Amino acid sequence: MLQCPLPGCLTLAFLACAWSASAAEPALFDEPNRPQFHYTPERNWLNDPNGLVYFAGQWHLFHQYNPRGSSRPTKSWAHAVSRDLVHWEHLPLAIRYGDGIEIWSGSAVADTANTSGLGTKDNPPLVAIYTGAGQGKQTQNIAYSTDRGRTWTKFAGNPVIDENLKEFRDPKSAGTSRQSAG
Image (cartoon, rainbow, N blue to C red; front, side, top):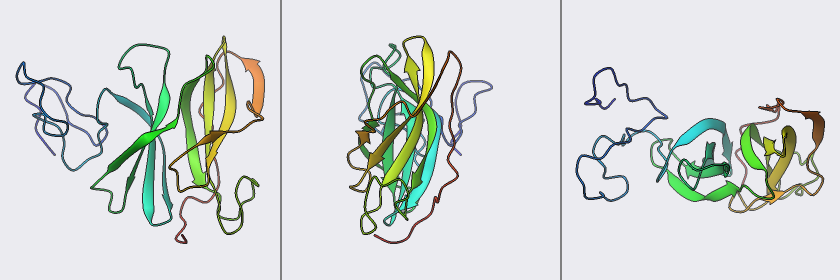
């Protein structure tokens, strides 16, 4: 674990120190004090890891992320993949804010039996279940990918659960999270 130079500061697996040692902007991943053996986003911050799913030979990590830094409301889901849980490849945003709805916490699964019908038996989907937050309420929504998580489609029937509640979030799935085919 890297040592943080500030008194009382801890560096954890999903936290990166957010200060710069000089006025010059260092290259991504070369910043002083950035953990090198834990996942960190390219820029800005991360929140609420939302699924570590093994699918088609890669671990898929999703987390809440704001591509605009700290401005709101544009929370989306970032996505990275790894074969060894040490080296990470950042992919484009998986599920992007839009239509006044932020993408909040949830979970992701590999639907290996294609029970959702969103893929095929030969090409099963990755499925994300997430809270959509906006317009004064929170709803449960689905997005899916049939290309190993490279592109995502929001389900046309979203929201799949709408109880018209202000606080209604963090859906967790009970599906298969480990799959070796692919």
